[in-house]
Image (cartoon, rainbow, N blue to C red; front, side, top):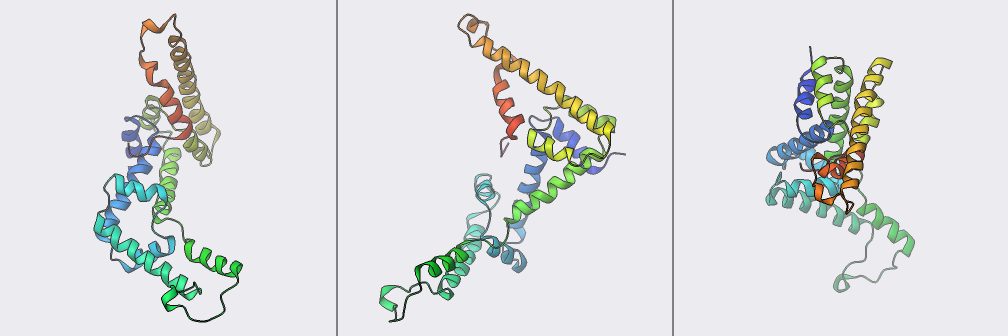
Length: 235
């Protein structure tokens, strides 16, 4: 019987792009949405965010752009981070403003810079990245464990396939030759088809064929970027 994750993979295979990219994106968006709604004032989560200096560039702007967190939540979280960094700067001996500066021997330049680098460097990884890594392990493990189920195999065959980054990761979970061969056969066929479509797109860009117009190969270049680098975020 397919696992719950296998059903989610089958559903994701019905949509454009890499199904693993899609499920990872949804997992991160749910994580951020839930935590901003429920845990902005949670001491445990705030400790984690203080240590990580909030979120990485990708997940901070994902939260903003997808409106997964509100302005008040961001203000509370990032004021807390700034307070912690300023306290570290003070404790590290950063020179005080001129009006309050005491006549004391300044720190040697290299020592001052090292202390400031320590204050400005996160101690922990972005919590959304941590959640993403865990979600990825669960998704890829389920994909390999349930690939022998006909519904999942057929769904993967009908999908756009896994992107190269996730195909590489998935191969690390393979435990037998038959699963490996099935996974590679599915993707070899997709890559051959995409290569042919790219060739047709290139041909139709020649002045002698431009009047033919484009069919399904019209977006082949976008699908090639997606399959080799991973699906676009926020889709």
